[in-house]
Amino acid sequence: VNIFDFSISNIGIVYLVMELLEGHTLEEELWEKGRLCLARCAEILSPICSVLTEAHTTGVIHRDIKPSNIFLHQNKRGEVVKLLDFGIAKLSEQLVGITLSGIILGTPLYMSPEQFESREVDFRTDIYSIGIMLYEMLTGQVPVNGGTPSAIARQHLLKPVPSLKELRSD
Image (cartoon, rainbow, N blue to C red):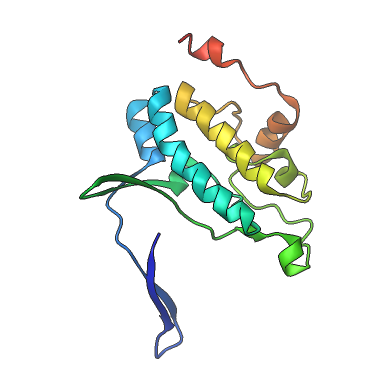
């Protein structure tokens, strides 16, 4: 998302002036359509992977890749796919020289096993989340289910992913 300005108001409130996005999230599209064709998945994930490649090259790991953080912005030239919410992004330790252990951040359905175990994360964490999201885009459901974060974590760690062929024969 383009940021045009930022400042602190007279009363000490920090603010950003960002572009206005028009459109909907991938989460909303999945809610409406259930599942997507392979071509539509590629249209959405290709720019997301490009953005993540740039982020990873500079040492930034998003850590919260999920359909509600993918925005399908409509402008005069068509659709522009945007990756939102770097709010819990992590800078690689090589850049900052610190480790925060014991802190679990992310959305359980899309988190990597390393995140659940409070282990060091790297670019593979985002790739894992992209895989979960792609599975959902193709099948209409995430490969894990369960009400509590700990139940979801156990499934990520121990349960084999159901075959795509079982859920979608094409």
